Image (cartoon, rainbow, N blue to C red; front, side):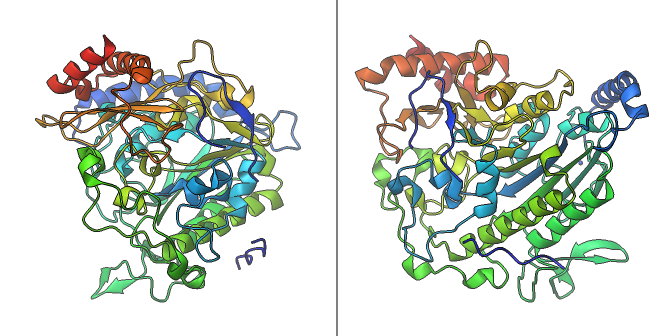
Length: 532
């Protein structure tokens, strides 16, 4: 029986300065050659780690130190402002985007605890703020165009070597539960044949935002049915069948099964993505009658670029969304307490993050896919007291593409050398930037090969975003002067050198990481002009 939840109910910084401070917050059509390359690497890495595989990590009572476990709690379409620990990094007008009335604010004490006892990144961005591309970058350490998942429902290359594959080769028990979204159009498609190192993927399903699951003699399935087919209905869901609870239980079961050896498990919760429904009692905890319109809800469409135009229909109501978040937080608490009861919490790198955000009415938009904060910035909270001091706040820009090299460095596991992201581990463990750090990262929109028009491409620092596309003039956002992201500063004399520097960074990125968006004639011309 699950335990009942407990009763417990500033701004962007200047570019360039080192800002790591104390936190105030509590499937595959690819060539056989590609597959053979991957197999050769795995064979070699298995041989190289033979000694490790022959001697599993000892329990805490053994003579050798235990390797750190890794548990990743990964949500879908999560607006960072719904978390208390992130609101605490913002001024009130940015923190309480839907008002401060009771019933309009979700408290998240369990996620906040992870931040309080570990580190919080205030500037963690999705390489592409859409489900499949973001997941491909997190898994591989490569930019989406090179995975080559640049849009939803595309197939991850067989050549990708994931962090789970690398951990598996060094003796880790690995597993995954929840939404995968990297094997094409299958839906739900349980237990994809290609698991990319997640050995136990019985509870991995390719895609869909189902609300209820159940175990059957034939394996897991969606519990809610309409005319014999899987349904998104939440009716009848309880704390045993509701997606977030059910998947969290599978995580706990995996931990119990593998507690005597190092393990890596990724829990991919399909909420708080739509449909905006949640089981009782979370469905009645919040009140849309007191929810306010976001500050930017009534933005002037005439002044907006194509990638940020207001949507004809937009819902900013938050009650069910907050309910989903509250259920997520309570299950983070369940997992944390279980690790604690097993004496494994401090031996576990525990991470809470998401694939992308959700506009939730900001800029009169819904969902994701654009470079504005509510869409592109996601929470990244990590707890591992053996190496990461409590209350650490990291204001440097970090990206989903940086995850693989960073986490493997923390775990002292060698990468495959294919990663394009940066090893940011020193930001977490030593409160300093790695040598030759350039505090800039890159994001891109979705797209398909050979499109005549390309989506947006962006260079991002803690303060600025340079955004280019084939359909618009260049935009430069200054989050210090305009945190609402409504004003284009590209023409101002004070921002000329910033635009020049970021344009040059984008040119280098485009060449280094073979991003075709930077080679589009219009974008290339814009970059040349700005770079001087």
